[in-house]
Length: 92
Image (cartoon, rainbow, N blue to C red; front, top):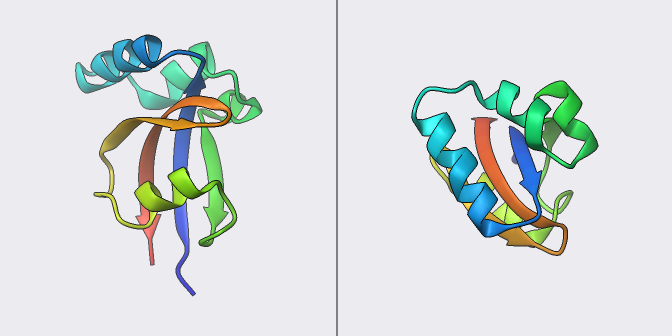
């Protein structure tokens, strides 16, 4: 069964998501941005979601995490929770 590890940042607007993505792509540390801005409890751990398999996260997450490029910031990804930036750190 496929497994992945990822981290994310959750915010309430697409505009905020784009702003944070630009900061990260400009050199800011993903984990630091997550601790400062993410509204998800995982933000305290730098957005780390740990290891999970297909179907354990919402569909929109799965689509990105199990097909997207590793170690690249993806998003904004809209879910029922808000807007996410995702970084896939490993996949097997």
